[in-house]
Structures are given as structure tokens and as C-alpha cells.
Length: 393
View 1 (cartoon, one colour):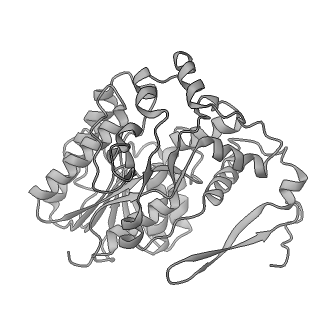
View 2: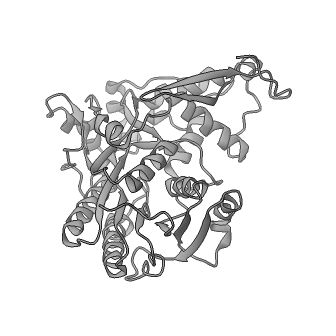
View 3: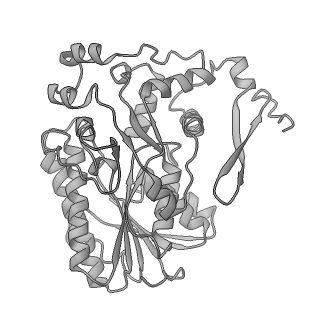
């Protein structure tokens, strides 16, 4: 692939999304012109925080109205764009009544509309498609059939269906459709990012986000049913945004990229919260596999989900992503604490009862020393938030 011309605009679909906002921020900070799509141009409250990002950056941001289901709705936004980040997708894993209408049709139609319009536009050279680690594996039991139980880019989810893990099913068929269309259209190539469960600060006061909802529920002790020892593949949203940029501008990058950093449980996440905010009543009891199965009738999980996921271990191999994208991942503690700071600043949670000890020894990760192949995180301890005085490092 030829080098992307940075003087040309870059398109980010679904601009108000949790991840898309960070991609836009990074692009604007590099002084690029960014085209982004929103559901309604008239609803400025939906995207005014993005306009504020533009005012703080050397780049330029232009808004376009587009809809997943409307054929040709991306055509205007694609004008003169050589690089496209297709992040726009309905992220919904609960309260799904009609998976075809809410997830599957929008996912597939969104891919088709974008790819056909990109081919017609003629300028597009690369599409970076946001998929998911769930397109690589559905049920954890499937990972047990892999020799080393490690999921990697060669694996595909073949257990999810429209009625069982419909979100994962939709992500899987949407990515497959993207690869199929990329073979049909020869004007541009395709690179895919497959993130794990993203956490980390949001750039707006969103509440309609699974990641934000999970953290708010954690802080309100309403995540008890998820305090099992079942591990999740976590990653910082800022790392995922950075991965997208490197996949877009580095002409050597190819293929799929399993973009997850930490394999741990929500119980461990809650322990990090309690470490720095001990006065908070986060869930503390670990729900064992046996107890989780007994509680199934009272939880929002199907018996098939329990049978295929509880009691099975899995892991992942992100070595290709680290090498191909030259990326190091942020520590999980930084992700969680930065996320908490954002939620508190936006008044989505309250941290007024943070203990004096925790407040005095709150870790700051402001300075980062980067070496050729590793990062050394320099911890700085602060005095109380009232003084803001930094202790010598």
C-alpha cells in the first residue's frame, strides 16, 4: 500500500462513540483534518464536546450526518479521504429483544454501505475496521480445544448465534463481511483491530456506554453477579485508539490484531478500587463457579452461557499486535484509576469519602519514560488534593 497523504482528511465513523472520540482526539492533536459522522447534525449537544477538542488542537474537524442503514449516507463524508476508521457500530450486550434488528442488520449493512461508498469515492486507500476479540472466540469452553488455550488472530468465533451471544455473533459476521468485501474491492486494503473489553476515561459525560455502566455499577455495588472468578480480556481505550492510528498510517501493518492487555476478573478490578478508595462499598465476595451455577436462575444469564463459560479458562496471545503495531499497553491500575477520576469529575460517581490515607498516596502516572522496547512508569505521590503539592521523585 502507498503512504497515506496526511494533508488529506481522515474519516472516523460513529464519531461520538467511546473509542471514536479518542481516535479523533489523537488525529486532531497531530494537526490532521478529520471527517466524522454523527446521527444528527441538528443535535449539537450530542457532539459539542468534540468541537471543544477541535478548539484545543491544531487539527480541523468536520461533521457529516450518516446512518448505518442508509445506502450512500457515507459518500459525502468520504470525499478526498484516503484513510477510514470504521468504528461505528451499535454496542449493546443486554436488553436485546430482536438481535437481527438491533445488532446484526445494522452491523452488516453498515459495513456494506461504507465499503461500497469507499469504492465509489475512489480516493480511499485503507480502511481500519474495529472488530472485537469476541469475533475470535465466543464461549470459553471453545478455548479449551486449542492446544495452548490461547486465542490469537487465527481463530474465529464459531459458537455464537443470533440467540446466544448475539453481540459477539454480529461482530463476527460483520468482520467476515469486511474481509469478503476487501477481496472484491481493489482500490483499498483492510486492517482490523480486535479489542478486548475497553476501560479507561471517556471524553464526554456519557452514560450510554457498556464500559461506563460497568464502572458505575461497580462503584454502586450493583455488579455482584459479575464477581465470579471468570476472567475478562481488558484493554485501555486509549491504547486501542493508538493501535488504530498505527494500523492506519503504518503501511507495513497487515491483518487482524488482537488488542487486549490484561487477563483478569471484575473481582480483581474491584480490589484495585478498594485499594485506593477503601471507604467505598464495592463488591467484595468472590462468587465461586459452583455458586454462580446455583445462582443462574436469579441472574441474567442463560443456562447455556453458564455451561459453556463458567469453569473454563482461556488466555490470549497479543504478541503479533505488539510487534506489528509497535505498541506497549498501559498498566491496568492506571486504566482503572483514570477511569474513576473521569467519572468523578463528570459527577457520575462521588469520591468524597476517599480516605485520607488513600488521598495522600494516590498514584499519579503523569511521567512516562519510553525506551526502545519498553516503558518505565514513574510513580509520583501527591499530598492531599487540597494542596496539590507533589512530593520529590
